[in-house]
Image 1 (cartoon, rainbow, N blue to C red):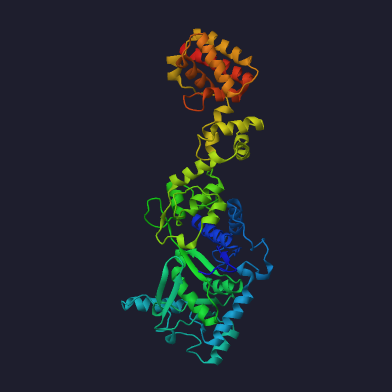
Image 2 (image 1 turned 90 degrees about the horizontal axis):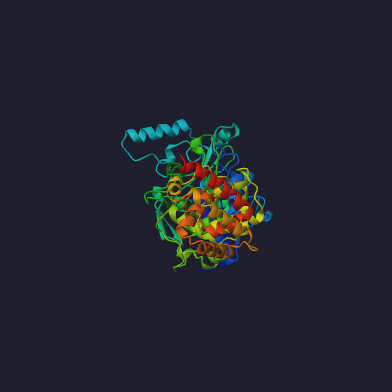
Amino acid sequence: MEIKNVRVRFAPSPTGALHIGGMRTALYNYLFARKTGGTFILRIEDTDQLRYVPGAESYILESLQWAGLLPDEGPGFGGGAYGPYRQSERKDIYQRYAQELIRSGHAYYAFDTPEMLEACRQETQEKGESAFKYDSQTRLKMSNSLTLPEEEVQARIERGDPWAIRLKVPSGEIIEVDDLVRGIVHFQSNELDDKVILKSDGMPTYHLANIVDDHLMEITHVIRGEEWLPSTAHHVLLYRAFGWEMPRFSHLPLILKPSGQGKLSKRDGVQLGIPVFPLSWKGDTPEDSFTGFREAGFLPNAVINFLALLGWNPGTDQELFTLDELVEAFTIEKIGKSGSRFDYDKAKWFNQQYIMATSDETLAGLVRPMVEAQGYHPRESFLQAFCGMMKERVVVLSDFWDTGRYFFEDLVVFDEKTIAKKWDTGNKTLFEGMISRLEALESFDPETVHQAMEAYMQEKNLKPGDVFPILRIALIGTMKGPGVAEMLSLFGPAELRRRLERAFGLFDALVSQ
């Protein structure tokens, strides 16, 4: 495959939140553009004004920015020579090309009302025939410029009768598409309908706008979801009608439900309690509101790594890729045909790996907002050390607070079973002596603290089981968590004394009940 002056586009419709499948489409277009030294374009396909949702375009832009998939051209990204990049701002262009198809005989005006079309559907159904199709077999029975005198056609247009321009699909032809993912795909033209390509309000349908824009923006490769494969036959006919060179097509495999049965939908996110959108979206109803990967505590590079492998295989055992490594390894030829199961546990595994590999400083910046939302404002040095201690024990960012909140707030719940078994009021003097010994240390790093504790226990003939469970529960309320010396080092001498004295008083009260 010759690759020269590559131009690809991601062309979402602003009809709601961007599904994670759309994000994968954007990713593959981005990777291919960067791999080939080409151009990655964002185009907003907003011709369907009935389904347009305010805020959806800004959501798309924010999602791409969060994921680091910045377009070279698009709304707000430059590339004016090929713009505008919103289809609603290109209406005059589509009307001009629709008229060209009328003149060349590849399209025609149709005046059939919705009521007339519904009557045709009902009649076909009553006869027990297949569903009504507006095509070469039926068009000459309908109300259009192929059956009406030219004078009447003009009169209807001039008096403002509703109309649509339909593509005139030829009969008895085999339409061939050489898809870079699926190989040669054939369509029979007799199975296609005469698609509406322009409506009387001046707005084009997806088919005309898509082809005209791809041509004028010099798109060389169309990388899009499998659901658009059936539309490709009409697109090939449009390219032929205009006499334009076609881009190379690549139709991506479906992303399947976690069960592997059926296409992943936005409702799966609600039903399974998992994110299927890059960012959260608040709709008009709770049923239309969804949690995103970002708000679920995922790092963008982890999501990108996870998505890249949903349909593409590098051909090696490597699983963790930086974005630059993905660019280097990516080829369309390694995209599979079969659907890929959305394995949320695998997504969490990726996130865990990326959190562990992220610097303590960066993590502190991500964790601080959630800590401050709880009313705590820790020193930066404390927060960074906390993140470094906890990052191998968390899966998503919210786990830093959920599993480590005891570093910031005073405990009210303790492991009472262990306290009853291990605490002896008479041993308080031994622990107070240990606190004093630790307070005298010149350095309070974990290794120094650990050595001082070992020396004290040996001197007092104490076993680890006599000391560490009590210290751990006094500090964090549970037997789970980081190493005791690590925690003592993080708290520092003053906070250590305050926490232990408070806890020992509560322990005394518990065992005396």
